Image (cartoon, rainbow, N blue to C red; front, side, top):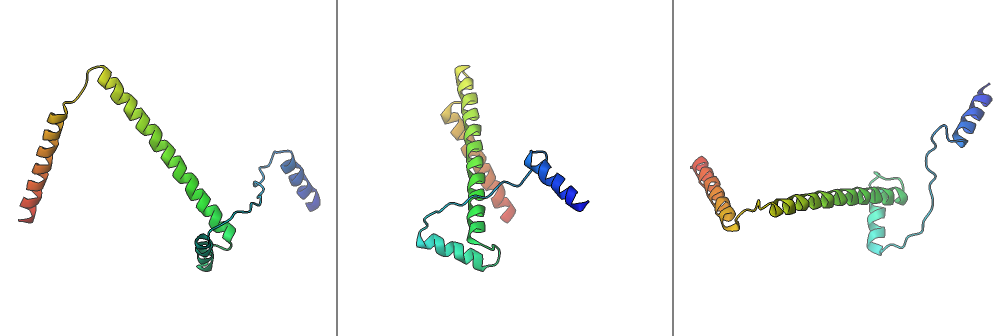
Length: 118
């Protein structure tokens, strides 16, 4: 009976009913001596069992960084589109006035900090 259950699971997995872990593939990569030493040092710490684990972790971090960078890029583009639309409607800020306001805010902040430390 146990054999039948295993067979059913295998059959279900083969037809896509049960998700299967993605197969791993092999890829040869040339590394600088510095990177090779870095990878070996990570393995020696015991945190990683193999050099492949270190490389996979590095690629996951790179993937996350690329996603974050892409998201930041799209957010910046959206801000620029909003700013361009405001400019087209004439909703502009005078640069001189804006910097004077900023200078005044900075001075108030400095003055408040001096009073706290005195």
